[in-house]
Length: 279
Image 1 (cartoon, rainbow, N blue to C red):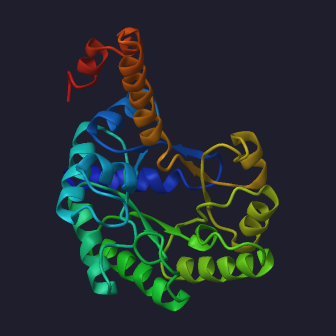
Image 2: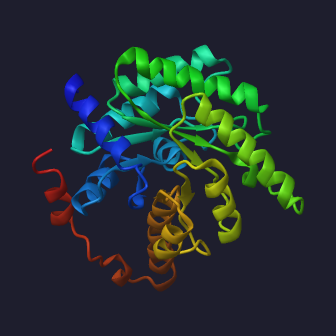
């Protein structure tokens, strides 16, 4: 990708986080889904680490080889003329230096943003805040050195631990982490798994920075999230699992009925071909 084009896309993505309106980000898992979302008029596209891993033949949790993930990101950035932000899970590395190397490679693949989790791979235990912040700082320094002002979405995984009770201490720890990640160079905070409106509002007010919410059943709608001050909504694995669910239903219906009516679709071969006619 031309360097100036990439810088322009990074700056455009950065402007989308000014909190004047919610940025609605669909998460793509391959070039086809990315192209479809672009055709539907989304302003930017995110990747889903899980959906991408499944499409490559691996489980989620940094089990997909980084080289294959980078190739998939490059295919997406090739077929869309939009900012693409990549989910790199925990950064594919035990050390900040390894995280920096991953970020350099992701930038080379054409992405202009990254998600970085603060837990161990596979939704593991949270890293100490200072350790997680050092990884964010390494990502920012790598981007600065590359000359591409990527948007770093720092994931705060406190609500992925599935512990009951202790809501106040969990929020307090999340705020502490968010502030540390912002100070280290993050641009947006992603409290994945948090859907409670009151807690979201408290987090937004406590850190005064863009906050990303994962869309899904039970999550407040866009109007309410706007009122709460949320800046960005992404779909995580939802579109990937919806696609798999649709195919699964059709396959089961075909097996059980012996008929092929379930293979009818509003999205045809011709529609898919048209997605790539100018790619």
